Amino acid sequence: EAGVTQFPSHSVIEKGQTVTLRCDPISGHDNLYWYRRVMGKEIKFLLHFVKESKQDESGMPNNRFLAERTGGTYSTLKVQPAELEDSGVYFCASSQDLGGGEKLFFGSGTQLSVL
Amino acid sequence: GESVGLHLPTLSVQEGDNSIINCAYSNSASDYFIWYKQESGKGPQFIIDIRSNMDKRQGQRVTVLLNKTVKHLSLQIAATQPGDSAVYFCAEKYAGNMLTFGGGTRLMVKP
Image (tube, rainbow over all chains, first blue to last red; front, side, top):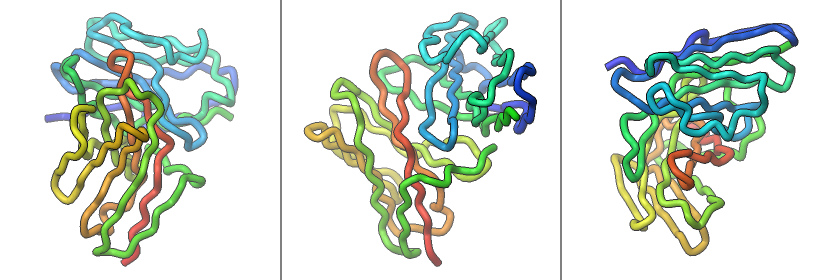
């Protein structure tokens, strides 16, 4: 079974540019999450999709970040315009259902460097 | 992938010894807890989970202990191996399905 895949694995951009990160969840997983780890600190929640709908986007830092999940399959996270403080690792995770406890499967992340 | 953080709390153990990694969680209403392992260049990998109605759960070479009185979670690794070297994150779940992660602990295994 293919795991969660993320593209690109690394991205280096200049301040003010736009970057789009992509996540392909495990096939059949309705739940898709974006997390990020900045400055080697804790992994912080950004948002949660159930199929194509945003269930919770309380972790999105500001309106420079836009996440989409058209058709309820893969998701994109766009940062426009990128700022220095956006540098970090962006993780995507997916899970199958909303049971009493759920195990998230993570991708390898996209290392974003904003110069 | 990423290189793991340089300023994390670090636990250094000898190969073959047991490791105990501790975590203090924040919300007394959390009902589910999970440990993840992150190796350099990879995403977090599931290790073991536990619900709030349990105090202890064992897996293969790993045991998670939950003390709700003091909001403390620990991960015990038996007979630590070089392949166990990684950053370990605890996470708690409350307020729906959002996992909240701790800051991580780096485990270094000396041969």
